Image (cartoon, rainbow, N blue to C red; front, side, top):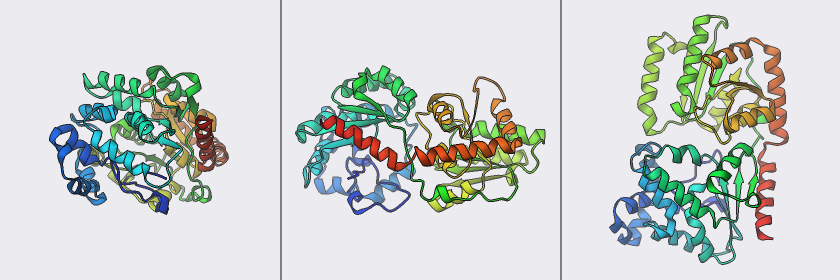
Length: 396
């Protein structure tokens, strides 16, 4: 059973009946509890209205979800769980999980939810708690002080009660084990997997136009401007005639102004007709996008814990050019689906892209190796089995 927290589920496909649960700990209610202590006394019917999916979606489109001064105190309060102002929302969640068949194991999708652990164990006697580790470190490290230090301290304290952690890459598991003081026996590595059913049958379009793709949130943290810089360099060199750039990904409210400025920059450079920008696409549109690419590159500026976009590209037969750091190094090396470049060297991304695009044989070999690796190992069925195995271990 999947229980959506904060916001409604956003899935590529319609959820099955077991995954249509109402939103718990809705984002609006949590925000009000953090800002206004008296919000805990709101009538139940009004609090339920604030958890309506339509209202939550509306608020998320207008709120600053990733770079707000409110995120520091809100993060700390969320990590405190029942020990903080979120107590009413935490208790509502436990009550919901107590209805019907109780779970044997609760898997938290990331460590920002570890504030729920003690309450889950008290409210659901005998339950085990497993927590996935992915992407918490860069978010917490960007919080302003004193909230950064407070959040890490709370997370270390809450981690003690978690029965097992699942790191999505060996690199990230090792980093978080050090920062959260996790013993080896509580730490497991289960790389992410994706649904390959449609991607494995995707046939790249044979337009003959060399095309660089970007598939991630359209923001600078994901290296959007670094890729545009490299594209401008390649265009100026003129060694790859007809080169195009296609940018595809989610756009949050805080991304709209930077994206508008990027469009103006491309227009000033006379490149607007060589660059496509696709925002908030459907699954069908994403598949079509992947089929048009010669190579994909998401030059994230921080150490990514994993990189699902790499798996999606490789499963579609598109090789990658990625920065040699974080979980991306591990992923590219293990799949052999592309090349890595040194982020410390100026123009390294442009040079790597140019060399790769000019070597059709190398690209074809990487595409075939990467696709085979994803279909064989980095798929949802293998991930399901590995997560289930961790859950069984904590029950023994």
